[in-house]
Length: 499
Image (cartoon, rainbow, N blue to C red):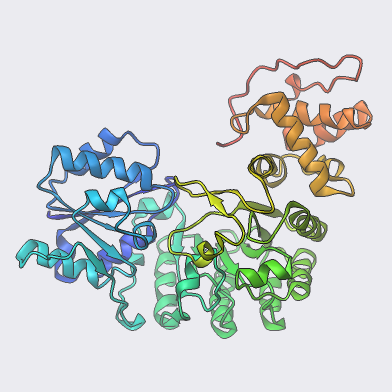
């Protein structure tokens, strides 16, 4: 064996689609290529030891914003203990601003952009000569019909235990400047019949969870309808063994035909990720985002009220031109629509994205270390940005977790952003933590905060008792009256909020 493809995934449940594409397109080298995935947090020495166990001549490493720091340590150690191994990097993190990155300086070669044609060609040159002189190789974009699909490379373990990532298309015609897809000129579809045949084969092997990575699933409605019909047919044929599909959709493009298809999905079988990002038209113009806010809001409301789809709607704080008041208005507007989850994200500077052009005009200051989170702007200072970061974390723990479903409306009242920010500030003052807060302690703290704002102790106890958060460890949760209240020292549960 001569070639090992590897990466550090964010979680075990994530299976690398990109590396499987490379293997599928290795041609005559496919028999000499292996795949070994790791998870971030693994010890560097253990990762390197397992890589060396394959005795590879070439190691291809997928580098992303979430793994670049750990990947850099892996490359540095490989170069110390086995300098004869040729290391080739690829992935979005090293595809832009390549030469200034330490990991690229350590490696032998870097493939930027699409790798299906360029990586195998580079490997042949490394193995057979003449040895390439250039370190950075721009990936050649093949016609979609020439790219071999990788789905047969999901093994039985992947199918049984991991998310299966699939894509019916690549690219995006929109130009939102915070997104790497803004660099694409258009969207390129795969042959739909061939793609659906691959889904059929996966389903026959037992696959039931499909996560589409298409940036704009509902761009071509005819294709979207055929894909959705595939899943509806499987649901009809196997009602006791249902499939689950996840799509990312454009919020203001939901024609009646697509609505009717969505309406047919039963509960627990369809999730839609919807990027709103901001409701401020001036900010949208700054970042080159085209969006009909009224139509978007109406479509999300329709999905909430007329479908069983689980809705995951995204907002981004820290965009150029947006202050806290503007973000708060958008947040409150979205809360009123009542999607199942609001993913409150903080702007990150992905390498290569055009948002950097606003740095001087809007005084954008980004963390120099991954994931390059915005630290301050001319509208939001560093301290307030950290408050927003904590808000986002607590929102995940309390709202998006679903553990406080009955209590949450009382927390939010008629001013959701203002009240949850007050809770967030209060929680941080009491705990000095945003991670690993035991669920029973969190429930008690939320109850204490509600009482401090005038809610009756018995009502608060009843609300928490009706929530998962209260039921998880009832014997340890006691919401004290104002007179009795003191710091609660609860035994820590074995189950904690995920880090």
